[in-house]
Image (cartoon, rainbow, N blue to C red; front, top):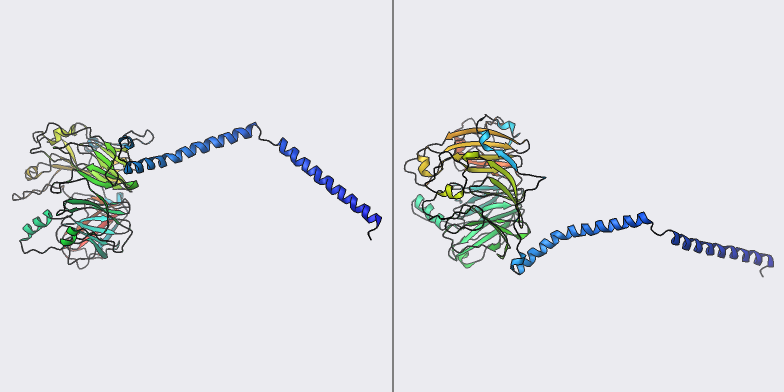
Length: 507
């Protein structure tokens, strides 16, 4: 049995515990009542909520644009089109390059003033290829190198020059003389529109199924070196011209015999920009059309300098404009225009450079196309290559056409513009072109190769006409270019062949 003393002591303890619990509950309730948000806390809470709301609105803007683009693809209605925007960003205005001022001070520039070394890549010889024998253009990606021929082949190499596979392979069997054979091949080439480039890590090319009257926009993943699916249309299999990749879209053209007025360029969000390659005389249209993959128009950029009242006969094709990618962004310069734009889909053209030729500029496209207009003292962009650091620009005085070339009328000038320092280096001014043979009907003139002095190694260099997907300038050359230089015996130039192909990347 529990004693009275122990029981009394136990009850006292219980009473104290109950009182403690009671006081604790009262304290909590009192504290909660007294610790409601003060005025400053309410203000902070309101501010946070306001900022969160604003942030949510900012986040939804791209989502809204994406939704609008998706709706436009599904329903091609006018209200889903975007209004073009060419506004200058006041915080990032375009760079003005005074081309006229720099003409007065040409200087000799050494290669070491711009670069630290040159990387040479020798491409594996392909005995069954028409690329290495006749015509070639090279595309250097982040993962592979591609050799491309307008005669109808695309070959893939790794970055060390080892052959991997054909993206497109064409069989040619002919006993005709070589000139006649090449003419026939070019007329029936599925790549005659000369569109082959990299948009980021995507190789893009235009495939013309001439017998079927169709033109396809093809894409191939540059990261892949596995053999991808082939085109399977009956016409392509019948003509033994299968290509690898994926059909992104059927292009907006119906007459493959004539060159497509607008060239297709792949943009982000799976959209395509159709950009002028040259001025259209017979059917003036937009400067650029941005469309969905199904062909629905998302934005049209007006051509503010169209060709008007022109018969279309004997026009001067003196300026083709420029279209190129740098770091995955499409850059465009309209023919007879002094501004280089960046295209930000779906509706922004951001001016990046203004090339000021002063009084030597062609004021209107109508004048530039007129065969009676005197171009003697007018300067025309011949080539523009932009790398991560530099602009390489070649321009002419007078036309480069064969007629004027035979008279050695065109005068060439070259300069390098340092984007980081905002400084131009004029390489040479008003140099005459090499003479053109009298029996030549189609060759145009070319600039003299008085280029940067190569003090990095003993290999002769040429002007860089392209850049890699990583923004580095490069040029390509074949064995003929080096065979005359007997002193060059170092790797990778040993055992040179006439058709050996090399890529030289400026680092």
